[in-house]
Amino acid sequence: QVQLVESGGGLVQPGGSLNLSCVASGNIFTINAMRWYRQAPGKQRELVAAITGGGIATYAGFVKGRFTISMDNARKTVNLQMNSLKPEDTAVYYCNAGIYTTTEYNPYWGQGTQVTVSL
Image (cartoon, helix red, strand yellow):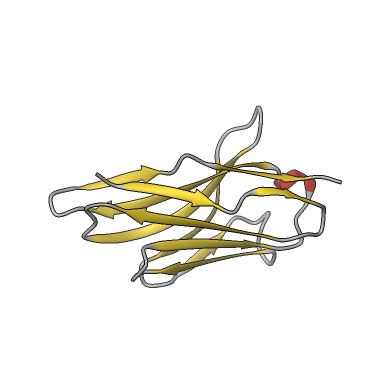
């Protein structure tokens, strides 16, 4: 059984910062890549940032230069440091990971963590 658990969301003023974390646990052989998605009310879920097990990171254009994704392979953790937050960054943020167990490969999702950027 594999689980992803996110933490670090909350309420922050425009221009502020938050750091999201996601920890993978369970019968994990290796992690292919980890990603952060977000979904705002009434909108489709969108990819925010991704990082491979080798440390190659990619970002959506709307967060480039403001957000930084990092991964700790040993601790099976991915972080998303979010700076210069804007009201339009308000959304539920979801962690996603491509994980190999000893028997199969599957994508997994966390339960989401709310980020609200408001005065």
